[in-house]
Image 1 (tube, rainbow, N blue to C red):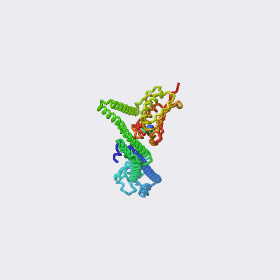
Image 2 (cartoon, rainbow, N blue to C red; image 1 turned 180 degrees about the horizontal axis):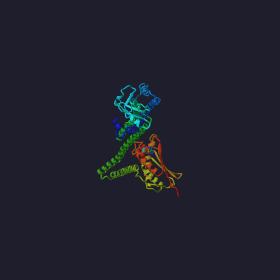
Image 3 (cartoon, rainbow, N blue to C red; image 1 turned 90 degrees about the vertical axis):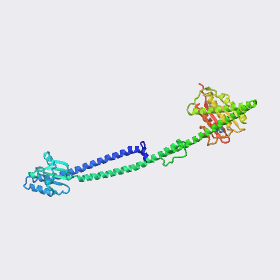
Image 4 (cartoon, rainbow, N blue to C red; image 1 turned 120 degrees about the vertical axis):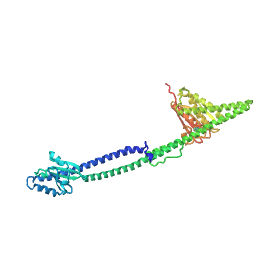
Length: 470
Ligand code: ADP
């Protein structure tokens, strides 16, 4: 869990980018709500202080010039009906408190500075917030009285703000609790979501590392049909393909090694024999024939491997020129005439009168024909027939090589043109001949199509674009 929070983790980014912003917005909203509530309460209190005291002072105006003015003021203060909410007081001309509605000793009141402020103001009123000696926070509204009595020069109304403060505090705590609840809810649901991405990704990562080190045993468990599930499918598919290609590659190495060993064994054996019997010209001659033949086979194989590696890294190029394809095909057939005879195969060549020229690489095209005829001979059994035919079709040149050999199963047929693929392990071969031939034909703008019936035979159709006469 801890390393989920490492520097570059998705969880960390989500926490900072999404959660961070949400928390900041919620805090701002809470602060704004508290400021609004504070303003609302303050203005409500202010209004009620002002309206109450203005009412009282308006009432006193009626008694302003009567003899009972002082008694009226005293009675108003002492019988003030809203004692519970407000404190009503009178202030003398010296600024000291002279009467209080709560009945506390007026002399105990400190000078709140409100009298001077009201006296010097144009309206004859003052509104202020102050803290009493007791530590209580209050709002004070003071009005200068019109009456002639010096003892009652002004009247003050006051109320505690501590209750409002408490209420604001409670509101703040409540809002904070709601905020915390929202944040926790988001955190849990978000973590669940992030973990549903992070955990499979981490699992994929560790399995992919195994694949990189060549261990393809494990597969990723697909839990959901979402993008992560699709990724799991894709990685599993990749692993299967890698495993297959790894297997095919290993088979390729073993078959190539085997292919190399067979002629080398023959060369070694016959050269030893020739060395042992230098005076027997017949044996020496036979040894030389075998050695030459096997060396030829080896060099052809090495050439094929080199071609294949050139195709792989894009170094395979064609030296194109106008060429007579018929000559190349005739030569390829000629090479196999002897071998077919020795293998008791009938090699039929239906040679056309003429074919259009091809703009291509003479040597490479011959290599293709040799390869295909070699396969036809190789995968045939004694008594079989290999026929080679060529004709023109709508300006294209078609070369057909058919055999009555072992054939290819429908399962293997789509794969035989792929590199290293050997459908038949009973005959020599590296499994890259068809891949190279197909590449060469495609580089000429042509196609190589294989049709085959297992046990009946195979037909390879090579189509090459002919040169149009200009
Ligand atoms: P290889 O060197 O093994 O012959 P290729 O690439 O030439 O490799 O051919 C690939 C596979 O296709 C062969 O292993 C063989 O199984 C199959 N194949 C090719 N040509 C024929 C054919 N004429 N008859 C039967 N099988 C063939």
